[in-house]
Length: 153
Ligand SMILES: CCCCCCCCCCCCCC(=O)SCCNC(=O)CCNC(=O)[C@H](O)C(C)(C)COP(=O)(O)OP(=O)(O)OC[C@H]1O[C@@H](n2cnc3c(N)ncnc32)[C@H](O)[C@@H]1OP(=O)(O)O
Image (cartoon, rainbow, N blue to C red; front, side, top):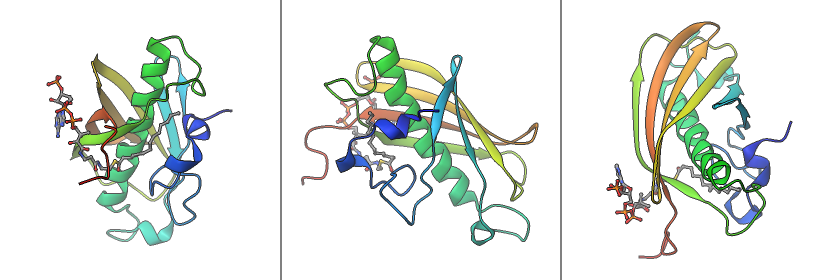
């Protein structure tokens, strides 16, 4: 199945969380399931915090890139456009809030996202991390369309 990240142009495919060109990164893949967005990811043993459990920074990073990908996909969907069409929607993280609800075990995780708000250049995404049926973390991301000036000081 085609993932949102498969449509990212090469010059924005180096992100540690979602870039297919970053061999050290998570290379997450996200797709629609109805009105939800879904990413599945299995942490490696080196993602450990307490033995048997995943590091919180990893969880935050997965929520981050799941949500920025969701923001882009939601904008394309709202406009009824294909994700390869121009002009491209590219989102960066304005804010990332994570609540760690329960310890997250080192097994397969499922992230489920919903779009809470689309306003101008901003998309607010809620994302829940599940280990099996158990919600172990919940995040909210404010994703903002990347300004032309991004990276220039
Ligand atoms: C095919 C798809 C392609 C996709 C490619 C994907 C690229 C891959 C990359 C993957 C990346 C992976 C992830 C990464 O790692 S991204 C890397 C980490 N993030 C950054 O480095 C971002 C740095 N910050 C900035 O560049 C700017 O500050 C941004 C762009 C965020 C906003 O500055 P800008 O001056 O442009 O925005 P605005 O002032 O006009 O505000 C616009 C709206 O946004 C709201 N707002 C702003 N900031 C915040 C905040 N902190 N909390 C809450 N809300 C905030 C603001 O209230 C307003 O809403 P409203 O008041 O109108 O309601």
